[in-house]
Amino acid sequence: MMPLLARGIVEVNSAGGDHVVVDPMGPIYMGSICLFLILLPFILVLFLAYYRNKYRHQQILAAMEKGLPITDLIARPQIRNREVNWVRSLSAGIGFLFVGLLLTAVWVWLYVTGEARDTAVVWLVIPIVIAGLGLIYLFRGILQKNYEKQKQKENAAPPQ
Image (cartoon, rainbow, N blue to C red; front, side, top):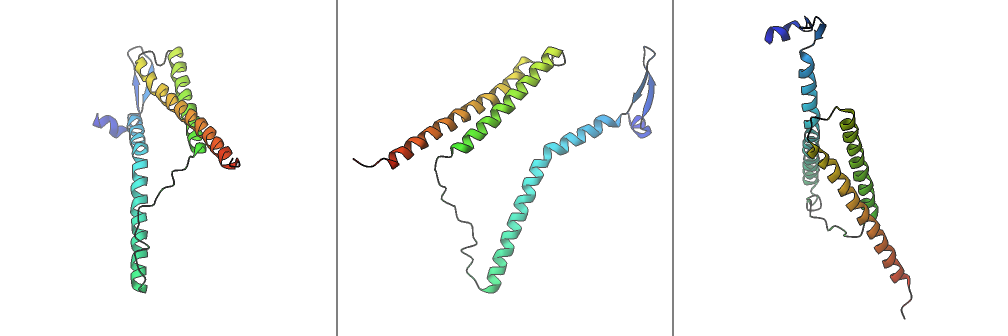
């Protein structure tokens, strides 16, 4: 295999007499690109965490040099507002539903054309689960919107 890789593109005659051009580095390039794309989000998260911590330490050192209290710069747990956010739920629901339906349609199309005949039908479960998650978020957003409207009506109504 190593002499084949060292030569680059190889022209081979198949058993049927067909002339075939083989690039043995093609799968290696694609494998390395796929691995890089899989690792890219993790690398970006690590870079962002590193630079965020580096910037925080620079701010703390600058505050210490000026003699300012650093208690304001040290991160405290923020109290999150637990208000109803129906727009986020509705948007996530539409996005998940779209992705799930698109993946289901692609799988069905590949299955009908015969390119995915040898794959198990169990792989169809993943897009269906994504679409189901989209429906859950969609209904949650609709219910949250109705709840918020009802709550606003109760607050706007004069007391009796």
